[in-house]
Length: 34
Image (cartoon, rainbow, N blue to C red; front, side):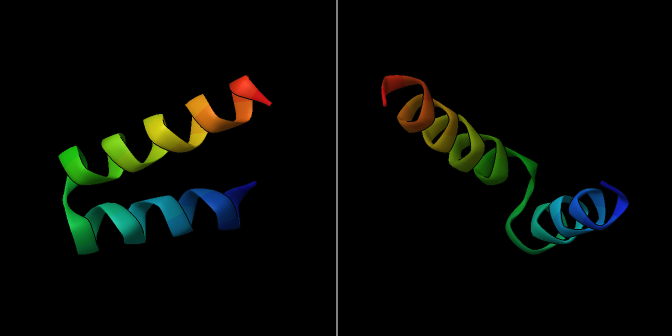
């Protein structure tokens, strides 16, 4: 769990919070549809 959180923080630092949020929202929507 903690490694996953660190990965998320690294993504936010790389891409910016807004872009990461959009990526996660699109990923979550795909998983919900299946």
